[in-house]
Length: 341
Image 1 (cartoon, one colour):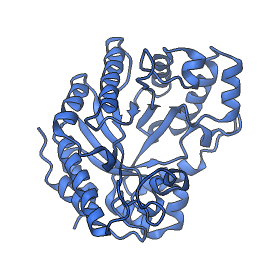
Image 2 (tube, helix red, strand yellow; image 1 turned 135 degrees about the vertical axis):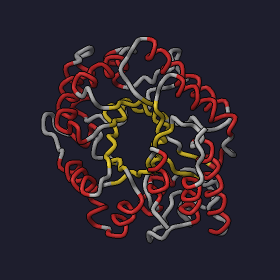
Image 3 (cartoon, helix red, strand yellow; image 1 turned 120 degrees about the horizontal axis):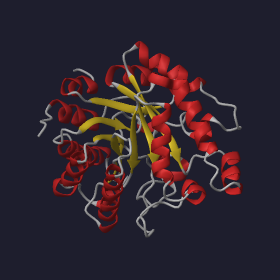
Image 4 (cartoon, one colour; image 1 turned 45 degrees about the vertical axis):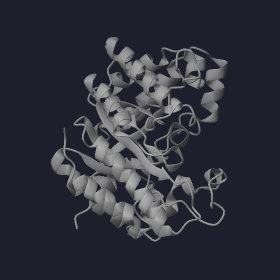
């Protein structure tokens, strides 16, 4: 059977995954699975500001340079994640912005250094990550960028990035947009309003990243919820990328076969919906192996999920030993049977 990307490539789409170069170096089975199944990779942590420039002016580009070298040898693209995210700002930058409100030069210098270094080797970026908060009157998260530069930091960031990388594609990447509940519904409205405002202003950006951290505790995804939202974004002339696909289980105490069926059914249901939308150009899972999933990190497992004390989440296509699970085969079938329109 062909790898996952082979089914999407003829549609002008790709399958990708989030990776860490140190794990690819150390785990040959993981590296082989990436090379066999992926048309793109996303650096899981090494392109975030706190990883790139922990000390001011001392950039650590080596991990991503190594990843790009490995990927390019196999014709795999690298997706840039992420330039500006309020939860990954180095302490020195937090202190500087707090002490110097309005000093945009810190953002300009950072973007110029990063975008100039990678140039055309990274052609698509999550420029702004998780900027929406529906609890606020203007639906913008009160992160360090908002507090330092005001609500128009979004527009300034888009213009700044375009100046340094005129040929790149820039995305706004958001989460909790999938389910039929008041929270997700409000977030869909807020995201569309932001996209519409930016487009009316003529801002230079190209697409929307939909994280798609699916969650079985929220019920089932619905076509009537997801498809109109994606089509509204597409009507603005935007490309859409499913950027961080995985799934949180609701009950880890039942037999694995039952759990795997629930996981694969929900992901298949989701993929069947999104792949009907021509503007959806890529599907990226947030990792390939359960053993490396953030959903099984110590911090996340403290959340109240039934059975979490004795079992691990099975929300990615390969198990801890890099054996393909039922989810892998469900994704394979969804990709091969996708019908655009």
